[in-house]
Image 1 (tube, helix red, strand yellow):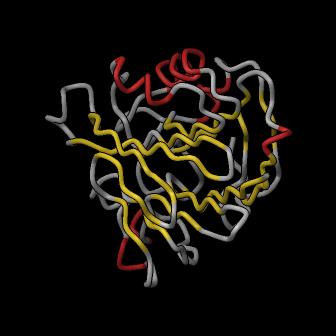
Image 2: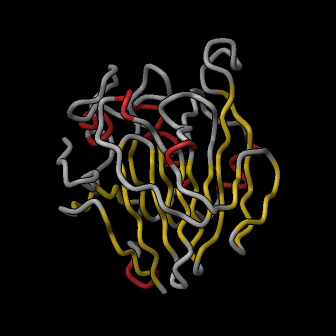
Length: 220
């Protein structure tokens, strides 16, 4: 059992299962300063409507959509979408987002979108037992390094994939990845933007997976 995780840039990922079903999460457009890849998929998950994560017009149909709270079945997969705030003032600054939790080929994946505050207990319960957690770490518009590290250590996923931080050519300011890495002792660096993750090779303790982003840009 293995899944493929592609980091297409910023907060956009494409996750592919053994049967070839491709889940695309939060596509962006060229206005954020990054090159736009091909966004083919069978399932499109959009966590909120901001310009850096909702470029539906660039995703070629057909696909099934996941963009509302609650449980949605798409591509034969059950997606649990949990609403939470995009900021620390209960959405007064940036509104709300959806946290996505789903299982694919025996692995539980949690995508924490652009959360701007530490979640409450009822959300923690849905995030227990994650194999892979995709987590914003860059601050300013989301939680920053210290809150991200707190969540990673509390929830103890096997792999943590950081996102939504400063990368080359990004058109707006975010905090650097290095602030988060200083708080996380275990890391695994892979010099690729497309990583095959076998279930049987998941680490025993929470480990940060450091990837390049498409088309091979190194981050620090």
